[in-house]
Image (cartoon, rainbow, N blue to C red; front, side, top):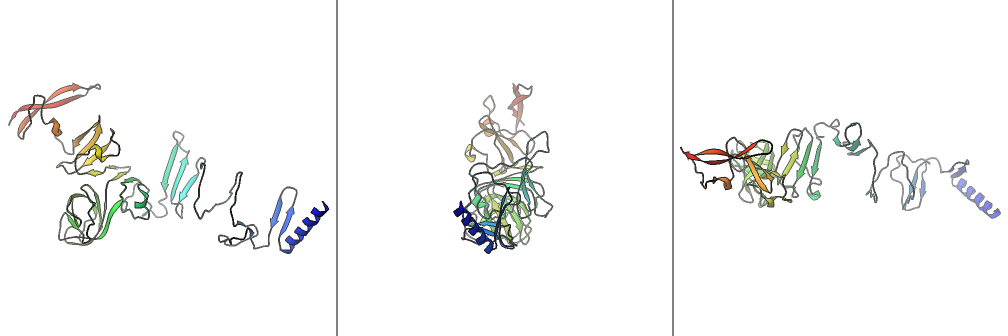
Length: 348
C-alpha cells in the first residue's frame, strides 16, 4: 500500500505539473485539463469539429467500444457511414429529418387516435417554389444527382415510380423546320432506345410549346414524331427530356404509363389480375385492365365497342360496316346487373 500511495502521489504531481487535475468527491471522479484545451485519448489525430475547444471537450483518435447503453443528450454528428447491425428504434412522434434545414421529415405520428400514421413530409415554408413534396421510387444509378425534370410545375404531393432506365434522353439542341410533330436532334443515336408511348417533356426552345407529349413514332436515331405539334414555328435550342414508363399518383389524379398497343402479359413483371394500362394509339384511346386471366378494355369515347374476337356473334355472323347490331341479354349477374352480347340485326 505504501508503494501504491507513492505512485498515486507521483501521478497527481505529474498531472498538476501538466495543468490537469483529477478529483473525486465520493460520487464521481473528474478529469479536468487546462482551460481552453480539450482532452484526447490517443495521438493519431487532432480534433477538427470543436469550434472553440474547452476543457470539457473529449476526443478519441482510435476506435471506441461501448458494451452498454450510450446516451447522447445533445446533437450527434456522423461524418462517415453510420452502420446499424441490429435494429434502429424511434419512439412515438420522433422526427427523422434530411436536408440542411430539415426540409424532409419522416415521423410516426400518434396525434390521430383512429390510425397509426407514418408520415412523409416536406417543409414548403423554406422555399415554397421549390419544396414540392415528392416521393420518387426508382433505380439508384439513374436517379442520383439527376435533375428529374418531372416536377417543375407541380404544387401538390406526388408519388412517382420511374422505370429502371430512368431519364434516357436529355438534350438542349432539339430542332424543327416549322410547326410540326417531328422533333429532330443533330446528335446521332439519341433516339435509338425510344419507343412509342415514351413520355416527352419540352421545357424550353425558340417557338417550342412547353408541355408534356408522348412519342407517336420513333423514326430513327435523330427523329421522333410526337402525338401533336410541339412548336408553333421553326425551333432552335429545344430543351427536351424523354422517359420510358412513368407512373404518378397525386391527390387529384393517377397518371398511368402509356402503351402503343394492347398490353400483354409480357409487358408486366407479374402476370396477375388487377393490372391497368393506358393505350393511346387507337383512334379513341383505350383503358385496359387485367381480370379473370385476360385483358379487357373500354374506349375513351361513347359507343359500343367489342374486341376483335367478339366481332362474330353467337350465330356465326361476322359484323361489317353499315350493319345493324342488336343486343341480346345472355347473363344475369349475382348482383342483379346483366350482360348482353351483340347479334346481327340487318343491313342499313
